[in-house]
Figure 1: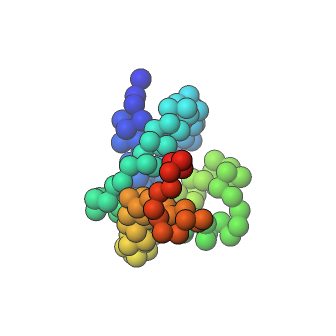
Figure 2: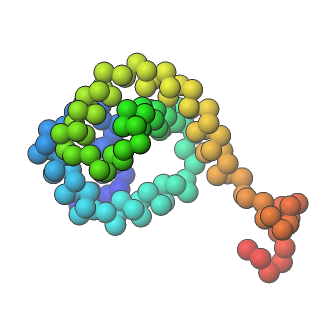
Length: 136
């Protein structure tokens, strides 16, 4: 059985277009490992990753999603059929240069969000950020 990290490393930002059978197999594997993936993602969200490679990978994913959203014109990705998803993947593969350009702009914002994780949120009632006894 694969751990979350191993499972995620296999699913690197894959630019190639998958066949119907591959997509169905991936969907089945994802359903099977849903709970593990959810817990792993929850742990990963708490960790701070600011190395260039990780930030760029996240930026590329966001940029790809941004272009896909624009292409779909309001339709949800989950509502698309398998053939439409493959067509969308092919379209996005052709736009790799544009995706890279958008990703480059997004990296700064992603880095700032990661840095926000380090800072503890300030309680709205207590703006000074000084912990009050009895509150955690």
